[in-house]
Image (cartoon, rainbow, N blue to C red; front, side):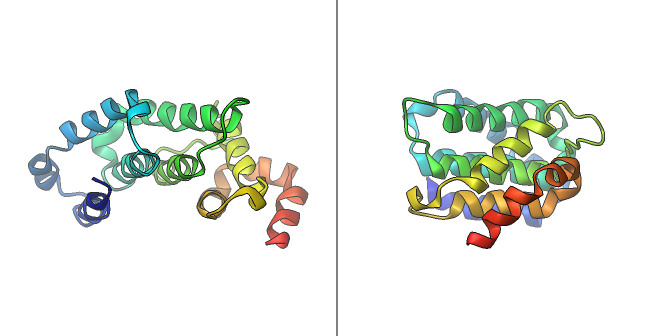
Length: 179
């Protein structure tokens, strides 16, 4: 199943703005299937969860008109998964799932902004999870997908979090220099 995601990703990107293709792809069913899968996510592999989260974000980025009715559900899914993975005291965080959620969130933010300046109630939360992923102890990380994705999110959407970045620039800058 994971090998289909790059193909779906490319199709979604190439068909941006084409509602005929969206109808032929039955995007509504696809999105609902992905949300349903994430409800029973304990049965899914780590890479499958990460790919589903990424694809939901890709749909938000390239087909925002379609995702208007799902935007709050998508944001809740990304933030809930980050909360579970990054604040669990009992289980080791799944870095692959965190990276997938951050990648989905990165794509989501292109069309569904959560700017601190606009007073978004989620801006601080998104920034905190992104910062936590970026400042994590990379000695424990076997792959660098999580901090790379966090850095990419900040690079592409810094204007949405500029007041928080300014408040904490010292920690962020020092961490980037360590790499």
